[in-house]
Image 1 (cartoon, rainbow, N blue to C red):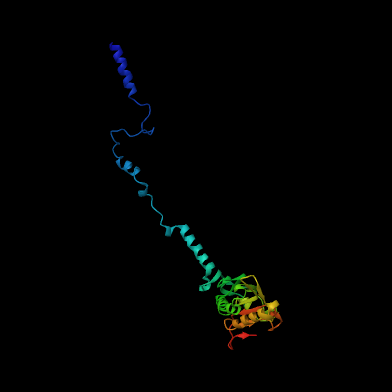
Image 2 (cartoon, rainbow, N blue to C red):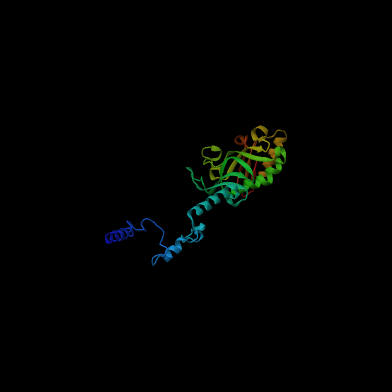
Length: 252
């Protein structure tokens, strides 16, 4: 009997010793409570996610936020605040230089639209010339066209910045085109798709009269206005530039 009891107690004692640590198996904490020093660990592990101790990144200092602000500024310029002029869309270019002495400009821009009137190509101009163009579109061109064809929708740009002499003549002074101060317009496009073409329509019927009125309205906003009848170089377009002369605008 004593031998049986001794064997029973030996087996019971062996069963009380685990083969591996309870902690290493991830078993739950005994009901008697956590070991000393782990109270704070348990408290943090059961905190609500809303109270995480991870530091939050302030949006205003995040690199992505800075990039977003820069892109927003570009969108604002495209939507219409180029040169500080509401309704002028395009982009800033900066300094222009050419291969001929006297060419170039400071703080040039590329204009895509003025007061809702789209240009057929981006025109590289100075801000002073852009202001003159907008003045003419708003105060002269729209009034000349009126409701014809639903009003003005666009302008065909025949020329803008180009480093060259006047009328490309050897030995002539640098053209205002070479200073980003000139733009040539060959056609006005209307909302209904119709056009007023300088070469085709000038001096003929109602369209010709509208073009002549628009041309006269450009004298003042621009320092120089040339077109059909001025010389053989301008029979198919209007030349507008922002050069200023001591005797006043040159319009012929």
